[in-house]
Image (tube, one colour):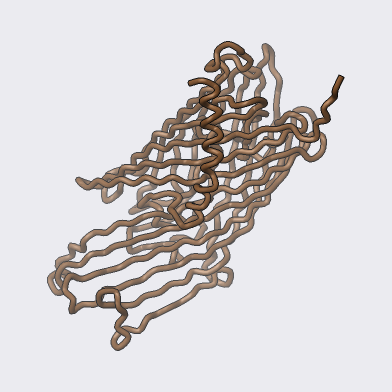
Length: 444
């Protein structure tokens, strides 16, 4: 593939961004997973296509060529006066299996929009928006309890959900001295989640039962990060990093409804519609976002290659999701919250960034892997997820502009008991935009 072809593709993707944003705002599901029925749905894996191609690492990463928002302190790794922006799109393709049943789903949406620019000397600002969690499911199954269907006939239980929580963040980082950097972000989490259920009867003499919740949520939290670099011999640099995101109380409301109807028409003579609203900020059962701790270590060889390992721990045991209506969904399965962990590793290499003869030698190539445990247990079993990632960045135009492509192959859940196994392949595309601000040209 020639450099001109890459540039044409880069421009085409830029033109597609407004249409993709419009689709996301129109309510298209950000993600689809039966496990998102619980709590606030699936917690999104953070990072740009750059991070995702390396298994999601970034806590100890100090690349001056790519935006890395996983550690607020990393924003100080930059060229002087450089402006950087990253726009990401993800395509998800999933296959679900439970017993002998199978189903498939695919979706495409914007994932991140992040920009960073210098403030003063060795300090810089970062601003962005990314998904925080996603709800997306649509499934049904027959009720097989003989004591029920023996009296009423066939009964079908169905459930549907959609919506996302987003995080809007702004922060800054500064280098206190040559090898030590700190950073902080203010994060605003907001969004709507809709969860609907229905119990329908084949016998029309019985009225179908409808119920559901609309969750309008918001929270304010913060994230802090540090990084320390230690130059070694032969162009090697060892970097250690750490992050902490505070827990936060969710505010807003959980608006629920329940009614009975025949063929979707409410029978007001015999069944009055019931509405109720919990104002979460006044609820006795506090509903919270879990706090998160992360540590990472990386080894870098000049501008040639880097290797990194990250570990994250998040405490959701006291989130209140498993006891507050609208979040627990106990009718679906036995759901309890717990702590989550993530182990990540990644490697990248650039054969020769300044090669003027062979374009592919200027490209960057990545590989990574991850293993996660979710923040909940279903029927007493904690859900696990693991995957392998591949990625590359294709240089475009001058400076550090580029097109980053990535593939994520993974599995979530299992077929043990009544659980569902989710196999997926995700394609990540990131547009890396770089420019120099406040540069004064000189003419001879």
